[in-house]
Amino acid sequence: MMISSGALVIDTKKYFTFSSGIKSPIYCDTRKLISYPDYRKKILLSLIEKTNQIGNIDCIAGVATGGISWGAWLADRLDLPFCYIRSEKKSHGAKKSVEGVVDVDSNILLVEDVVTTGKSLGQAAMQIKEINTAHISSICLFSYEFRESKELLSGLKIKLYPLMDLKGLLNQITDDTQRNDIEKWSKDPWGWKNEN
Image (tube, one colour):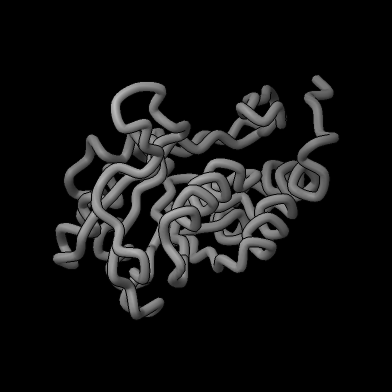
C-alpha cells in the first residue's frame, strides 16, 4: 500500500534529506495514504487491532501534523476522546500546546505517522506529561528504528508500536542490491551519503 500509493519511495542512487539532516535512500510520506479510501480503511483496521493489543487507552492524541488525521479517525472508530499536540505552543490566545480536553489521569495513546529520530514524538510526549500523570503509549505507521528514537522513547518510558518498521520493509524488498544498500545505510544513517 505504501509503495503503490507513492507514500514510500526507495532510491539508492539519489537521496532524500530529512528535517534532521539525515540523508536517506528511503522517503516515507504517509500523508499520501489519506487520499486512498481503501488503503485508509485497511490501515485503520491495523491501528485498531494494535491499539486493542496495547489495551487500557482512555484518550487518543494526534501528533502534528501527520498523526492528527490518523489519530482522529482512530479515536472516532474506538469512540474515545481525541486531542492533538501542536509542534509548538501557540503564541496567542490561550497559548496551548495541547488542543482538546485531556484528563489528568487518562492513559494516552500518541499517534504519529513516521518516526525517524523520535524528536517530534518525544516533544509531544513531554507536552502531554506537563498536564497528564498517567501512562503514555505510542503508535505509528512506520518507524525507521533509529537508535536515537529508541533511546529517546526509552528515556521517557514510552513504548512505540509501529505498524511497519525498517526490518519489515527490508523483508519485502526483492532487489538484493537495493536491500544491501539500505541495510548499509541503516547501520549509520548519519554518516551515509550518496557516492554516485
